Amino acid sequence: MLGIKDMVQDTRPPAIIGPFNIYGVLAIAGIIGPVVFIVTNLITILFAEEYHPLSSTISSLAWSRLGWLQSIGFLSVGLLVEIFAAGLLFSVQTKRGFGIGIGLLACLGFGLILIGAFAEDPAGASHSINGMIHVIAAVTVFSVFPIASFLIALSLRKDPFWKGLFPYTIIATCLAVGFVIAHFRLLPNKHWLGLYEQVLVANMVIWVEVMAIQLLRLSFRPGARFRRPKIF
Image 1 (tube, helix red, strand yellow):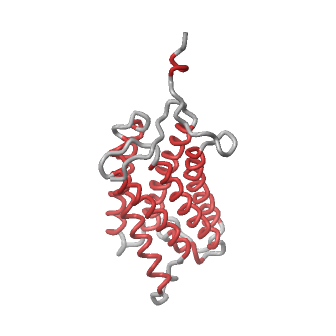
Image 2 (cartoon, rainbow, N blue to C red):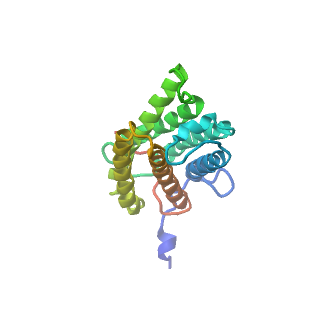
Image 3 (tube, rainbow, N blue to C red):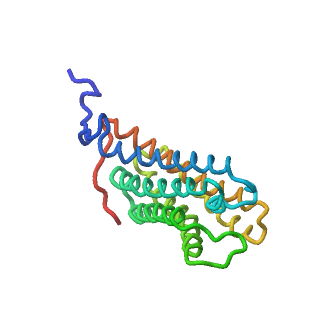
């Protein structure tokens, strides 16, 4: 007589790299990206001179001794977030707006790539094209994340494999909105600007990390549903 586990249909695609199927590989991209970013950012801060975590912006590290390392961190997390977004697209039962949320998440990844590729202008320097691209990309990333996470959360709530992360995603969204508003209100007063930027970015990359870990867990689960959802 078959047990319950034997009756569960294995809907997972075949493994492509060791024990990992395509969803596992996409999940690993989402796991590695935030880790690489956090590690490179911490190392850059450790060796930066005249950098103040409370008041100095994250982007100002680009002009420090190991600024190139931070740029690698931004480029890496941006590219890997775009790859991870495909994993979410194919693993969550979709509701209206989910495809837009995934598209915005991919745009967020591209924005992080632009932040890494184009450094902000040094303090006191005249505005340059590189600096303008950097600022536009940073504003876009900070503004897009709460919209993307909210639209994705609407689908998580109805998916039995993802609904456990619905409350956390809503909390991360609310934190992002609150800190974005506070960030722009603090622009004239830069005493706490660096801290707010650090919290904004940490909230975003930690959410990606948590979502990626869940996708990795599901990639090993025989009963998990993986299918191509409707985009809109």
